[in-house]
Image: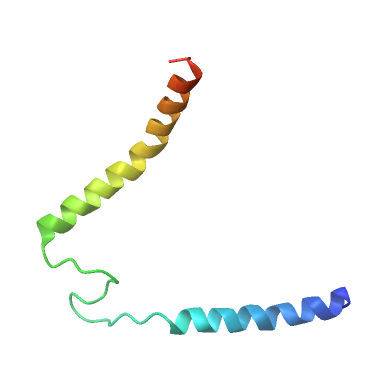
Length: 74
């Protein structure tokens, strides 16, 4: 298969993949129904949001500290 023929087929394949991905997601755009997850309880949502944000922020530092301890440099 020539490079020219392969490059001509590539946009059609990508366009088909993109169309399938877009059609697979449907979010109703109404009050309190515009997110792909529920947040009916604001305190619960805030706790989960800040807990996840803190965990994801701290993860690289925890891994770096673990690696330093493991190598004997901490």
